[in-house]
Length: 272
Image 1 (cartoon, one colour):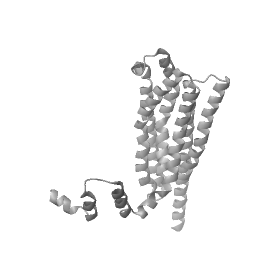
Image 2: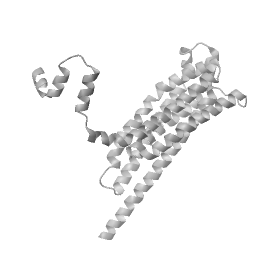
Image 3: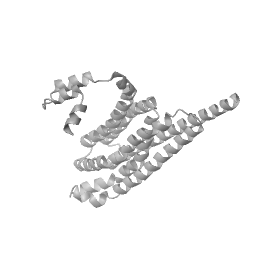
Image 4: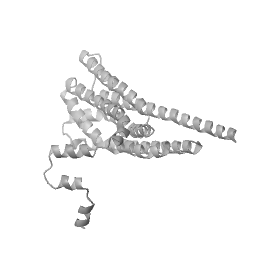
């Protein structure tokens, strides 16, 4: 079997693997020779929207950590680290929903037939992802409700635990909506609504940190008592806005698809 596998391997690959030591020069040389520019062009339209999406998300996390470390007290900062750790453990369960939507939706969206059946299939697919998103959100909310029971495994300081519990409402609302956010975002990517997502995350890149810095200013001037609960409540409002915007956009695109299908049916009837 080893001889058959070696015979099926290309000469370039055998030459590349003949020396067990992998160097950067060999890797770059091998990658350059086998680089397919036509395939790379297919992914080029996704570079800016996906990069803007990632940067837009990260900006909010950085702003929250900055406010917690520079403005809030030691107890709130410690509580924020615990809450953020739990947040990072729970969100990957739902982030995968976006990737699944990006895999399933294009098969429906790019169908050759642009009639009523395609519009109905698209509506059902989006509806199914919404149901799954709501279900995942409910599961994450239930896990968030368990934080007071497991908090003692993160810290024994009662003051820090009290601050952690104060962030539960904001964290719970964020995670409750996160399934709808990821499902909606993946569905929009599956329909190649790239310009819309790019523009929205460009807006979020500035507005979310700006609001967090506003909280910092109000806390430093004494105009408002800002704690970790305030910060996570504000962050949950950001997720609520994303939920509304994504699904309003999906409803708009669905109306366009159904309108286009009805127009085509009328044209076909006129031709007959």
